Image 1 (cartoon, rainbow, N blue to C red):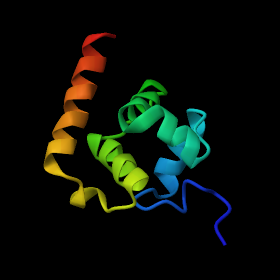
Image 2: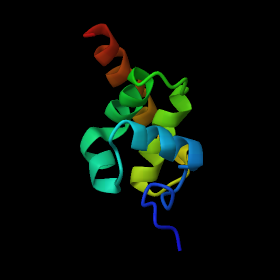
Image 3: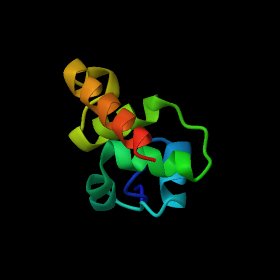
Image 4: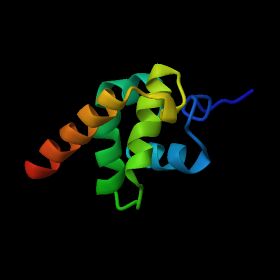
Length: 89
């Protein structure tokens, strides 16, 4: 039995779960609250060298699908949200 809720989610491995824990994200509810872009940015702001694949992995984890199976339009929306967030910082 996996006692780490993040590790039990699809697409999230040991390293990504550790990065998320380091940013204060310890469960699905918090991950959902921050969303894929917010969680990805929190990981990057903490100094971890995560690629945008992590953002897609988080999005897929929240939807229960492999990140490669995310709708391409949704991926574009995430990239646009990220671009807007980075422009505001």
